[in-house]
Image 1 (cartoon, rainbow, N blue to C red):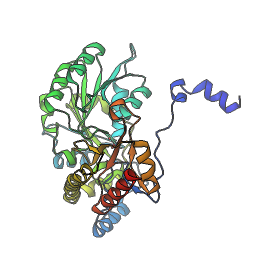
Image 2 (image 1 turned 135 degrees about the horizontal axis):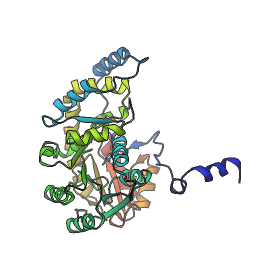
Image 3 (image 1 turned 30 degrees about the vertical axis):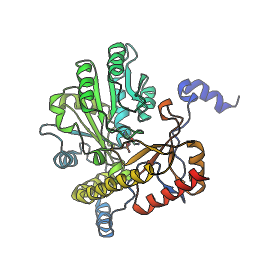
Image 4 (image 1 turned 90 degrees about the vertical axis):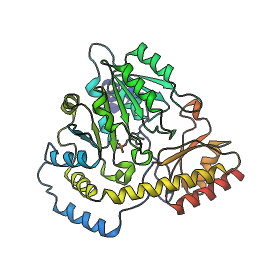
Length: 364
Ligand code: PMP
């Protein structure tokens, strides 16, 4: 064994050694429909204005640690209820790990629970925080299995339950009454995190219902809205609860360039909302066009991506790659996703190119 191998065996956790890295394929030269990004860039005059704002940012000092001005603007513009604050993260990925770190218990292993399949970071982050993860399978029609969720909550007493609303990778919006039943079942011993990463495309939210539920956290991101590059997530909850999570947040976690870009984006949020409206219309068109292809099943989507089932997902995925189209092959993620691909909704041009490639891939 080399010296470095010995060092790794002596120091790095065995469960970390056993897993692979979070893999993101290199998409250079491909039509990129794998990561739920907004395909539209900001209009040229806005990009020039943003450049000026970034040039004005102070780089030699640490960022303002409290971010209070930016947080207030987020609360005012993005529908956070009066009396509620937000906490900011370097993407919602960071917020998930902060929640887990704050809730991991020392006296026994705490449990994180989520429907399965759902966003993979719920499981990975729980593992890194030293928590057990319980995945409760969705039903075959990809809806939430409420009796199974309630039974698992009674059995495992999770500290945290993550509910992606709409769900990634299935795209559907879980029944709001079922979510309320889960929040109620968690009561005073568990926190429900409603992850609204795709809220701009669902136009359904628990944000305004925060005052009804002291154990509810509502989490969002600007990533899918068109600002994946700035890495900014935010979450809201009862102020006392948020104050506990804030203790775990790394100091200065939002850099000055992200703060400046976020301030700028808030000034122009109507442009981003307009792009989201275009993508919602494109989603309906793309879903209709795919449903007309023989052998393709299209699942309902309230997000900026669509899940489809094809006769052979591995084959279709490879043939799409040959045609320079990158989608996400989720067929090995879970039994209910057999032969499923996840496609990000894009511009009319890219959607049309994808449809041509899909049609050719299925025929070949
Ligand atoms: N939650 C869900 C449900 C997601 O699908 C994603 C991104 N794939 C995230 C959170 C992470 O978003 P961010 O870019 O803010 O880290």
